[in-house]
Length: 100
Image (cartoon, rainbow, N blue to C red; front, top):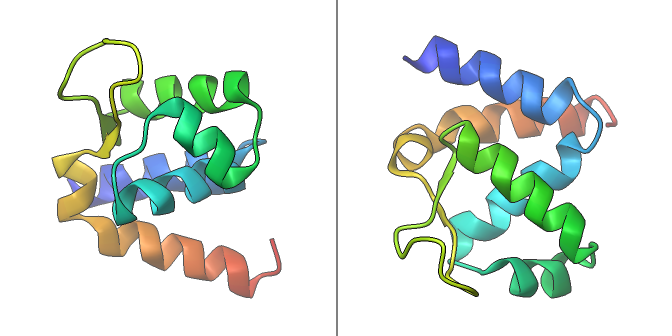
């Protein structure tokens, strides 16, 4: 399963536009849960952009929202990513060292 996660993260973080902002979202959510508005303020990104990235990350199983779709409910790093967070960190470090 780690190989599939590695490929997914390379695609979502390194292979597409907006990848570094998605990485910033995952890092923030790894520290603590945030709702979309809180992430927007914390990361200095447009609320619609944050919502779009969160939907993409949720669709790919990297973030979860246990409280459902209630307005302002928080997002969390999914148990799947949490259990394999070292893979994300490894990819993030490689990108930073390559100057991306």
